[in-house]
Image 1 (spheres, one colour):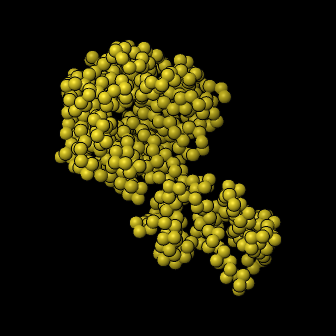
Image 2: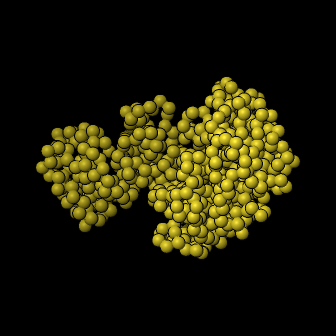
Image 3: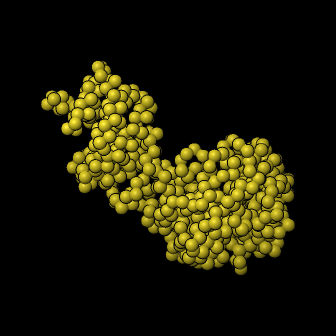
Length: 571
């Protein structure tokens, strides 16, 4: 409860009275229930990858996806955090068969994100789907136009990455293909990007089956190099190409640096610091059921140390991997997707390290459950603005479509991590759009629920309303004492005690109010202990509060003096 509110109540009251494992072994067995899946779109066939970018400037991630069997390229606009769990607005921006990849890029520099699509099969082309010039027409499918690049015809393209390489004109992009005549290289943007015939393709290396491409400065020279995985053929493995810099030399083959896995069938990879040493490592999926961890030993990506992380028995076959802190413990975790994940196998899981990442000990946690068979790229992004990373992906065998799994780790307010309780999804709340500030929110809560903390019948709705409101505040400075009071109002005294005790440990962070929160939260913790018939701990908390007796702040002095009264038998 806010100090100002308590002072008003108080006035009335007073008046009335290290070591790397070369073979890490299987991850430990999975535990935990599957995460809740929210469908964005399942109306076409064969969703094949998701790529994100904020295309309309609202600060929220939008999605580009190609539907391989459906032959359509779609853009999905994030509907806002209050509607994110429903279907998203979809725009079909083009129709091309056998789509393998779709990615946003403003290629003509008009401020509107276009879409590049890569197609295999009979299509064998790269197409640019041009966004309408009029911002208001972005969601009008009829206003989008599609152009195939003549320089791309004849190869089975698998993946594209927009990046500025030559320092002139608009964005260029890197692309890789598979099969006969496959290669990896880059398309150079002409002075007029809408002139399809003027785009030039510069082949950099023969390939077997390019799966993953990342533009990254691998050797710390300030230029974007190309990190990639090649699944098949004599050049398979994980490699990177050193960008020689602008000029004629950039159109010739670049120097190849091999990271490893030349004897494995590698699929998707991620480039991130897994072990916390400040250097970006590489993690790649490998058939049939492995992750390969390449640990960077220097800042120029010249030396790597590898280890195997075997997938757990309950998973399908390796497909994609992403690195991120899933459980908010400040350590990098691994999220992976699978194909051939027929029930009862799971197609999406995450691994948490037991000790340092280099120790090779991992615990597996289920995400998808048995639903779905063939998944694709996994993208880690906080889609619902609750402070933790959700998982965006797609599935094409059971046609689950494009969807995201909601991470329920919780949200952090002023250092306190609130973990979503089991009842969270069963309680529906909606804060009116007219609530635009703290005062309006407080008035709404009291009017809607009868008090600022609710009662035994509606306390959960009040608590969820507070959390949702705080989540929407980009600069929320609320110390979340109300969470404890809502639990107490609902008779959930053990939960309330946990909140008050945890916040008491954080009271020192509340500059200018440390004494107030140390005293008041100890008082509330003592009160909850008495509700639980735990008099020994109630005494300890009351003693903590009473130490502030005689404080110059009358509110603090009041609670300090009254803390021992909580220990009376009739309480």
